[in-house]
Length: 245
Image 1 (cartoon, one colour):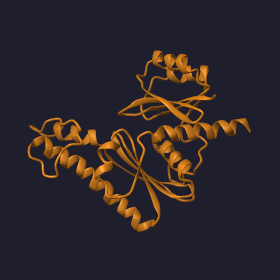
Image 2 (cartoon, rainbow, N blue to C red):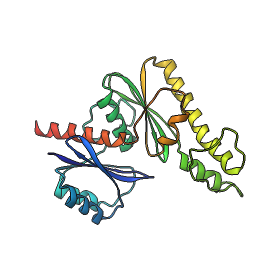
Image 3 (cartoon, rainbow, N blue to C red):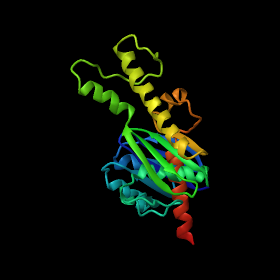
Image 4 (cartoon, helix red, strand yellow):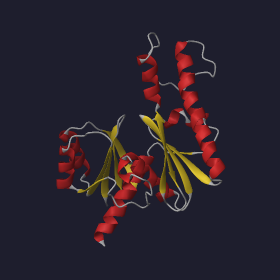
C-alpha cells in the first residue's frame, strides 16, 4: 500500500488530501505549523508527498516533508504531463498547473476548460494536444462580497448562501443575486466564447465555491471540488515514475 500526502496551500484554503493506492481516504484542513505536518506523518506514515503553494508559507514544512517522505514541490520546473507554450511559464500558479494536470489525466487528448473557484476565478485551457495555453483570471466570490462592503459606506459584508431569488427583496439577497448569478453568467459567457472557437471540449468546475454555481450554469459541466488534489497526485506519480527510470 502506497500513501501520499497532497498539500494545497491557497489564499483561501489550506488542506491536505491523503491518498492510498490512488484513492482519497481523507482531507484535512491545515495550519502552517510544523506540528500539524508532523501529526499527519505520524498518523498516515506516507511514503510520498507533494506541495502546491501560492502563498509565502512556512519553509519548515518543506524541510519536514523532505526528511520524512519522497517530497516534491510543484514549480514551473516540475516535469509535467503537458507542455506550457506561453511567454512566461514561470508565472503560472502552482494551483493552475495542478488543475491542468488533472484535466490531462482524466480527459487525455481532449480540449479542456478548467474553471477553478477560489479566491479568484481561474479559467485554464488545455487543448487536445495537451498544451496549457493560458486562460484568464477574475475576482472570486469572497473577494466580491468583501469589495462591496469595503468600498461602500453602508453595504454589509454578506456570507455566501445558495438560497436566494433572482430579484432580491432586501440588501442581502440583492447582493447574493448580483454576486453569485453575476459570476454564473460571467462563466456561461466565457464558456460560450470557447465553444465558438472549440466545438468539442470539456468544462471542469472545481474549487471550494463550486457548489454555489453548478446549479446556475447553463453549460454542461463536470463538477469535482477536489480536482486540484487529483492533479497533484497525478503530478507526484508522474515525477516519481520518472525518477525510478
